[in-house]
Image (cartoon, rainbow, N blue to C red; front, side):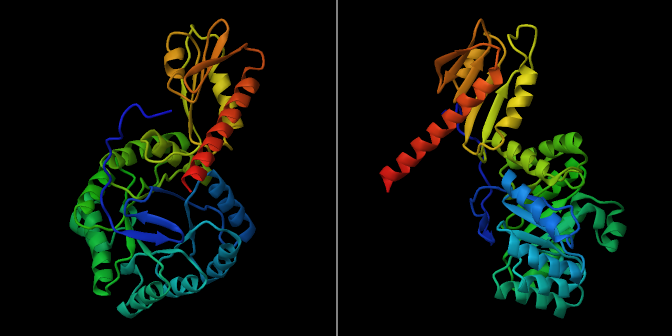
Length: 372
Protein backbone atom coordinates (compact mmCIF):
# COMPACT_ATOMS: atom_id res chain seq x y z
CA UNK A 1 0.00 0.00 0.00
CA UNK A 2 1.11 3.59 -0.49
CA UNK A 3 2.80 5.40 2.40
CA UNK A 4 0.62 7.77 4.41
CA UNK A 5 3.39 10.34 4.88
CA UNK A 6 6.55 11.30 3.06
CA UNK A 7 9.62 10.13 4.93
CA UNK A 8 11.06 13.22 6.68
CA UNK A 9 14.55 11.70 7.09
CA UNK A 10 17.15 13.50 4.95
CA UNK A 11 20.29 11.42 4.81
CA UNK A 12 23.72 12.92 5.34
CA UNK A 13 25.69 13.26 2.11
CA UNK A 14 28.84 11.14 2.10
CA UNK A 15 31.46 9.68 -0.16
CA UNK A 16 30.70 6.19 -1.39
CA UNK A 17 32.87 3.13 -0.91
CA UNK A 18 32.33 -0.42 -2.09
CA UNK A 19 32.44 -3.35 0.34
CA UNK A 20 32.54 -6.17 -2.15
CA UNK A 21 29.46 -5.58 -4.30
CA UNK A 22 27.67 -3.55 -1.63
CA UNK A 23 27.78 0.25 -2.01
CA UNK A 24 28.14 2.09 1.29
CA UNK A 25 27.38 5.78 1.57
CA UNK A 26 26.70 8.19 -1.26
CA UNK A 27 22.94 7.68 -0.97
CA UNK A 28 23.06 3.88 -1.15
CA UNK A 29 20.60 1.92 1.02
CA UNK A 30 21.78 1.56 4.62
CA UNK A 31 23.58 -1.79 4.82
CA UNK A 32 22.89 -4.26 7.62
CA UNK A 33 25.92 -5.95 9.13
CA UNK A 34 26.52 -8.63 11.72
CA UNK A 35 29.54 -10.49 13.09
CA UNK A 36 30.20 -14.19 13.49
CA UNK A 37 30.73 -15.56 16.99
CA UNK A 38 32.09 -18.96 16.00
CA UNK A 39 35.78 -19.85 16.12
CA UNK A 40 37.06 -18.66 12.75
CA UNK A 41 39.27 -21.73 12.53
CA UNK A 42 36.10 -23.84 12.66
CA UNK A 43 35.42 -23.30 8.99
CA UNK A 44 32.25 -25.37 8.73
CA UNK A 45 30.58 -23.70 11.71
CA UNK A 46 31.57 -20.22 10.55
CA UNK A 47 30.37 -20.79 6.98
CA UNK A 48 27.06 -22.17 8.26
CA UNK A 49 26.55 -19.13 10.50
CA UNK A 50 27.40 -16.70 7.71
CA UNK A 51 24.93 -18.39 5.38
CA UNK A 52 22.17 -18.20 7.99
CA UNK A 53 22.89 -14.51 8.54
CA UNK A 54 22.88 -13.87 4.80
CA UNK A 55 19.57 -15.69 4.43
CA UNK A 56 18.15 -13.49 7.20
CA UNK A 57 19.17 -10.41 5.22
CA UNK A 58 22.75 -9.53 6.21
CA UNK A 59 24.40 -7.36 3.56
CA UNK A 60 27.88 -7.60 5.12
CA UNK A 61 29.40 -9.99 7.68
CA UNK A 62 32.43 -9.31 9.87
CA UNK A 63 34.76 -12.13 10.87
CA UNK A 64 37.41 -11.91 13.59
CA UNK A 65 40.90 -12.87 12.36
CA UNK A 66 43.18 -12.82 15.43
CA UNK A 67 45.91 -15.19 14.20
CA UNK A 68 47.61 -16.29 11.02
CA UNK A 69 45.88 -19.66 11.39
CA UNK A 70 42.57 -17.83 11.43
CA UNK A 71 43.66 -15.91 8.34
CA UNK A 72 44.18 -19.13 6.40
CA UNK A 73 40.78 -20.35 7.58
CA UNK A 74 39.31 -17.03 6.48
CA UNK A 75 40.58 -17.68 2.97
CA UNK A 76 38.64 -20.95 2.80
CA UNK A 77 35.56 -19.26 4.29
CA UNK A 78 35.83 -16.54 1.64
CA UNK A 79 35.75 -19.19 -1.08
CA UNK A 80 32.60 -20.80 0.29
CA UNK A 81 30.33 -17.77 0.81
CA UNK A 82 29.13 -14.97 -1.45
CA UNK A 83 28.28 -12.21 1.04
CA UNK A 84 30.93 -9.46 1.45
CA UNK A 85 33.26 -10.16 4.38
CA UNK A 86 35.04 -7.73 6.70
CA UNK A 87 38.04 -9.03 8.59
CA UNK A 88 38.53 -7.78 12.15
CA UNK A 89 42.27 -7.34 12.79
CA UNK A 90 44.31 -5.80 15.58
CA UNK A 91 48.05 -5.21 16.07
CA UNK A 92 49.57 -7.71 13.57
CA UNK A 93 49.86 -6.05 10.17
CA UNK A 94 50.91 -9.33 8.55
CA UNK A 95 47.41 -10.75 9.13
CA UNK A 96 45.93 -7.79 7.25
CA UNK A 97 48.32 -8.35 4.35
CA UNK A 98 47.42 -12.03 4.21
CA UNK A 99 43.64 -11.62 4.21
CA UNK A 100 44.04 -8.93 1.55
CA UNK A 101 45.67 -11.60 -0.62
CA UNK A 102 42.86 -14.04 0.24
CA UNK A 103 40.06 -11.80 -0.98
CA UNK A 104 38.76 -9.83 1.99
CA UNK A 105 36.21 -7.14 1.08
CA UNK A 106 37.04 -4.68 3.88
CA UNK A 107 39.75 -4.42 6.55
CA UNK A 108 38.58 -3.45 10.02
CA UNK A 109 41.73 -2.01 11.58
CA UNK A 110 42.82 0.92 13.64
CA UNK A 111 45.94 2.31 11.91
CA UNK A 112 47.19 3.60 15.24
CA UNK A 113 47.58 0.12 16.76
CA UNK A 114 49.21 -1.53 13.74
CA UNK A 115 52.64 -0.21 14.79
CA UNK A 116 55.37 1.56 12.84
CA UNK A 117 54.49 3.82 9.91
CA UNK A 118 56.08 1.43 7.41
CA UNK A 119 53.72 -1.33 8.57
CA UNK A 120 50.67 0.91 8.30
CA UNK A 121 51.83 1.97 4.84
CA UNK A 122 52.19 -1.66 3.79
CA UNK A 123 48.59 -2.38 4.82
CA UNK A 124 47.26 0.75 3.13
CA UNK A 125 49.22 -0.01 -0.05
CA UNK A 126 47.78 -3.54 -0.13
CA UNK A 127 44.29 -2.14 0.35
CA UNK A 128 44.80 0.49 -2.34
CA UNK A 129 46.20 -2.03 -4.83
CA UNK A 130 43.18 -4.34 -4.44
CA UNK A 131 40.49 -1.65 -3.98
CA UNK A 132 39.79 -2.83 -0.43
CA UNK A 133 38.26 -0.20 1.89
CA UNK A 134 39.22 0.15 5.54
CA UNK A 135 36.94 0.55 8.54
CA UNK A 136 38.37 2.53 11.42
CA UNK A 137 36.68 1.24 14.56
CA UNK A 138 36.91 3.37 17.72
CA UNK A 139 35.51 1.82 20.87
CA UNK A 140 35.08 3.44 24.29
CA UNK A 141 36.40 0.29 25.94
CA UNK A 142 39.76 0.38 24.15
CA UNK A 143 40.78 4.04 23.99
CA UNK A 144 44.46 4.91 23.93
CA UNK A 145 46.02 5.20 27.39
CA UNK A 146 46.97 8.84 26.97
CA UNK A 147 43.38 9.73 26.05
CA UNK A 148 42.10 7.84 29.08
CA UNK A 149 44.49 9.91 31.20
CA UNK A 150 43.61 13.17 29.45
CA UNK A 151 39.83 12.81 29.75
CA UNK A 152 39.68 10.68 32.91
CA UNK A 153 37.00 8.47 31.36
CA UNK A 154 35.54 7.79 27.93
CA UNK A 155 33.73 10.85 26.55
CA UNK A 156 32.42 11.86 23.11
CA UNK A 157 35.40 14.18 22.68
CA UNK A 158 37.80 11.36 23.55
CA UNK A 159 36.19 9.09 20.95
CA UNK A 160 36.39 11.79 18.29
CA UNK A 161 40.01 12.63 19.12
CA UNK A 162 40.93 8.96 18.84
CA UNK A 163 39.15 8.73 15.50
CA UNK A 164 40.91 11.81 14.16
CA UNK A 165 44.31 10.31 15.02
CA UNK A 166 43.57 7.30 12.85
CA UNK A 167 42.09 9.49 10.13
CA UNK A 168 45.19 11.69 10.11
CA UNK A 169 47.33 8.63 9.41
CA UNK A 170 45.20 7.68 6.39
CA UNK A 171 45.21 11.31 5.24
CA UNK A 172 49.02 11.39 5.29
CA UNK A 173 49.00 8.25 3.15
CA UNK A 174 46.40 9.81 0.80
CA UNK A 175 43.88 7.03 1.45
CA UNK A 176 40.25 8.13 1.60
CA UNK A 177 38.49 4.82 0.93
CA UNK A 178 37.33 4.21 4.49
CA UNK A 179 34.33 4.24 6.80
CA UNK A 180 34.33 4.97 10.51
CA UNK A 181 32.60 3.85 13.69
CA UNK A 182 32.67 5.38 17.18
CA UNK A 183 30.96 2.97 19.55
CA UNK A 184 30.17 3.03 23.23
CA UNK A 185 27.74 1.06 25.37
CA UNK A 186 26.30 4.36 26.60
CA UNK A 187 23.62 5.74 24.25
CA UNK A 188 24.23 9.42 24.95
CA UNK A 189 27.99 9.15 24.51
CA UNK A 190 27.60 7.25 21.24
CA UNK A 191 25.06 9.65 19.76
CA UNK A 192 27.10 12.73 20.73
CA UNK A 193 30.31 11.27 19.28
CA UNK A 194 28.69 10.38 15.97
CA UNK A 195 27.11 13.82 15.66
CA UNK A 196 30.47 15.48 16.30
CA UNK A 197 32.37 13.40 13.76
CA UNK A 198 29.58 13.66 11.16
CA UNK A 199 30.17 17.41 11.04
CA UNK A 200 33.92 16.97 10.41
CA UNK A 201 34.29 14.30 7.73
CA UNK A 202 32.36 13.13 4.66
CA UNK A 203 33.23 9.44 4.83
CA UNK A 204 30.47 6.88 5.49
CA UNK A 205 29.67 6.06 9.11
CA UNK A 206 29.02 2.58 10.50
CA UNK A 207 26.63 2.77 13.46
CA UNK A 208 26.40 0.61 16.53
CA UNK A 209 25.84 0.67 20.28
CA UNK A 210 28.62 -1.65 21.37
CA UNK A 211 28.00 -4.38 23.95
CA UNK A 212 24.35 -3.34 24.05
CA UNK A 213 23.23 -6.39 26.03
CA UNK A 214 21.00 -9.40 25.53
CA UNK A 215 18.25 -9.85 22.98
CA UNK A 216 15.57 -7.75 24.69
CA UNK A 217 17.65 -5.11 26.48
CA UNK A 218 20.14 -4.79 23.62
CA UNK A 219 17.36 -4.39 21.09
CA UNK A 220 15.80 -1.57 23.11
CA UNK A 221 19.11 0.21 23.69
CA UNK A 222 20.18 -0.12 20.06
CA UNK A 223 16.80 0.99 18.75
CA UNK A 224 16.91 4.16 20.81
CA UNK A 225 20.54 5.03 20.08
CA UNK A 226 20.61 4.14 16.40
CA UNK A 227 17.11 5.49 15.93
CA UNK A 228 18.20 8.92 17.17
CA UNK A 229 21.07 8.97 14.68
CA UNK A 230 19.15 7.54 11.75
CA UNK A 231 16.37 10.08 12.35
CA UNK A 232 18.97 12.83 11.78
CA UNK A 233 20.16 11.16 8.58
CA UNK A 234 23.41 9.86 10.09
CA UNK A 235 24.50 6.33 9.27
CA UNK A 236 25.40 4.28 6.22
CA UNK A 237 25.77 0.81 7.73
CA UNK A 238 24.47 -0.53 11.03
CA UNK A 239 25.13 -3.42 13.37
CA UNK A 240 22.84 -4.24 16.27
CA UNK A 241 25.33 -5.72 18.76
CA UNK A 242 23.53 -8.34 20.83
CA UNK A 243 24.59 -11.14 23.15
CA UNK A 244 22.52 -13.40 20.91
CA UNK A 245 22.59 -15.34 17.66
CA UNK A 246 23.89 -13.07 14.84
CA UNK A 247 20.71 -13.88 12.92
CA UNK A 248 18.78 -12.01 15.63
CA UNK A 249 21.03 -8.98 15.08
CA UNK A 250 20.10 -9.01 11.41
CA UNK A 251 16.37 -9.37 12.11
CA UNK A 252 16.39 -6.47 14.57
CA UNK A 253 18.38 -4.36 12.11
CA UNK A 254 15.83 -4.97 9.41
CA UNK A 255 12.93 -4.20 11.72
CA UNK A 256 14.63 -0.98 12.74
CA UNK A 257 15.17 0.22 9.17
CA UNK A 258 11.70 -0.89 8.08
CA UNK A 259 10.08 1.02 10.94
CA UNK A 260 11.85 4.20 9.75
CA UNK A 261 11.02 3.37 6.12
CA UNK A 262 14.71 3.37 5.23
CA UNK A 263 14.67 -0.20 3.85
CA UNK A 264 11.93 -2.61 2.89
CA UNK A 265 12.10 -6.39 2.88
CA UNK A 266 9.58 -8.96 3.96
CA UNK A 267 6.44 -8.37 5.96
CA UNK A 268 5.80 -5.34 8.13
CA UNK A 269 3.24 -6.49 10.70
CA UNK A 270 0.73 -4.20 12.35
CA UNK A 271 -0.88 -6.02 15.28
CA UNK A 272 -2.90 -4.93 18.29
CA UNK A 273 -1.74 -5.80 21.82
CA UNK A 274 -5.13 -7.54 22.29
CA UNK A 275 -7.88 -6.86 24.83
CA UNK A 276 -11.22 -8.28 25.94
CA UNK A 277 -12.79 -7.11 22.66
CA UNK A 278 -10.71 -9.54 20.60
CA UNK A 279 -12.58 -12.17 18.61
CA UNK A 280 -9.53 -14.45 18.33
CA UNK A 281 -6.28 -14.95 20.24
CA UNK A 282 -4.19 -12.19 18.67
CA UNK A 283 -0.95 -12.99 20.51
CA UNK A 284 -1.04 -16.70 19.66
CA UNK A 285 -1.98 -15.94 16.07
CA UNK A 286 0.88 -13.46 15.64
CA UNK A 287 3.50 -15.71 17.27
CA UNK A 288 2.65 -18.55 14.91
CA UNK A 289 2.16 -16.40 11.83
CA UNK A 290 5.47 -14.54 12.16
CA UNK A 291 7.40 -17.82 12.28
CA UNK A 292 5.54 -19.27 9.30
CA UNK A 293 6.10 -16.37 6.91
CA UNK A 294 9.69 -15.44 7.80
CA UNK A 295 10.77 -16.75 4.41
CA UNK A 296 8.72 -14.19 2.46
CA UNK A 297 10.97 -11.46 1.05
CA UNK A 298 8.29 -9.43 -0.73
CA UNK A 299 7.85 -6.03 0.89
CA UNK A 300 4.27 -5.83 2.16
CA UNK A 301 2.16 -4.66 5.11
CA UNK A 302 -0.05 -7.10 7.03
CA UNK A 303 -2.39 -6.04 9.84
CA UNK A 304 -3.81 -8.40 12.45
CA UNK A 305 -6.36 -6.65 14.67
CA UNK A 306 -8.63 -8.54 17.04
CA UNK A 307 -11.82 -6.47 16.87
CA UNK A 308 -13.98 -4.21 14.68
CA UNK A 309 -13.01 -0.98 16.46
CA UNK A 310 -9.62 -0.48 14.80
CA UNK A 311 -9.49 -3.53 12.57
CA UNK A 312 -11.21 -2.23 9.41
CA UNK A 313 -9.33 1.09 9.47
CA UNK A 314 -5.94 -0.61 9.71
CA UNK A 315 -6.92 -3.28 7.17
CA UNK A 316 -7.80 -0.69 4.56
CA UNK A 317 -4.21 0.62 4.66
CA UNK A 318 -2.42 -2.74 4.32
CA UNK A 319 -1.85 -5.36 1.65
CA UNK A 320 -3.53 -8.01 3.78
CA UNK A 321 -5.61 -7.10 6.83
CA UNK A 322 -7.50 -9.22 9.32
CA UNK A 323 -10.23 -7.54 11.38
CA UNK A 324 -11.77 -9.58 14.17
CA UNK A 325 -15.55 -9.86 14.18
CA UNK A 326 -18.50 -12.21 13.80
CA UNK A 327 -17.07 -13.57 11.55
CA UNK A 328 -13.52 -12.24 11.03
CA UNK A 329 -13.07 -10.28 7.81
CA UNK A 330 -9.97 -10.24 5.61
CA UNK A 331 -9.16 -7.25 3.43
CA UNK A 332 -6.88 -7.61 0.39
CA UNK A 333 -5.31 -4.42 -0.94
CA UNK A 334 -7.67 -2.40 1.23
CA UNK A 335 -10.89 -4.06 0.08
CA UNK A 336 -13.09 -6.63 1.90
CA UNK A 337 -12.27 -9.99 0.35
CA UNK A 338 -13.05 -13.01 2.51
CA UNK A 339 -14.60 -14.10 5.79
CA UNK A 340 -12.62 -16.42 8.07
CA UNK A 341 -13.70 -18.43 11.08
CA UNK A 342 -11.38 -19.03 14.01
CA UNK A 343 -10.98 -22.65 12.89
CA UNK A 344 -7.74 -22.92 10.89
CA UNK A 345 -7.35 -19.12 11.11
CA UNK A 346 -3.56 -19.11 10.84
CA UNK A 347 -3.55 -21.65 7.99
CA UNK A 348 -6.08 -19.64 6.00
CA UNK A 349 -4.38 -16.32 6.68
CA UNK A 350 -0.98 -17.69 5.70
CA UNK A 351 -2.38 -18.85 2.35
CA UNK A 352 -3.85 -15.43 1.65
CA UNK A 353 -0.58 -13.68 2.57
CA UNK A 354 1.45 -15.96 0.31
CA UNK A 355 -0.99 -15.46 -2.56
CA UNK A 356 -0.84 -11.70 -2.13
CA UNK A 357 2.97 -11.81 -2.11
CA UNK A 358 2.92 -13.78 -5.38
CA UNK A 359 0.52 -11.27 -6.92
CA UNK A 360 2.71 -8.33 -5.88
CA UNK A 361 5.81 -9.96 -7.38
CA UNK A 362 3.92 -10.75 -10.60
CA UNK A 363 2.77 -7.14 -10.89
CA UNK A 364 6.31 -5.89 -10.34
CA UNK A 365 7.76 -8.24 -12.93
CA UNK A 366 5.12 -7.19 -15.47
CA UNK A 367 5.93 -3.55 -14.79
CA UNK A 368 9.66 -4.18 -15.25
CA UNK A 369 8.99 -6.05 -18.50
CA UNK A 370 6.81 -3.22 -19.83
CA UNK A 371 9.54 -0.66 -19.09
CA UNK A 372 12.29 -2.73 -20.74
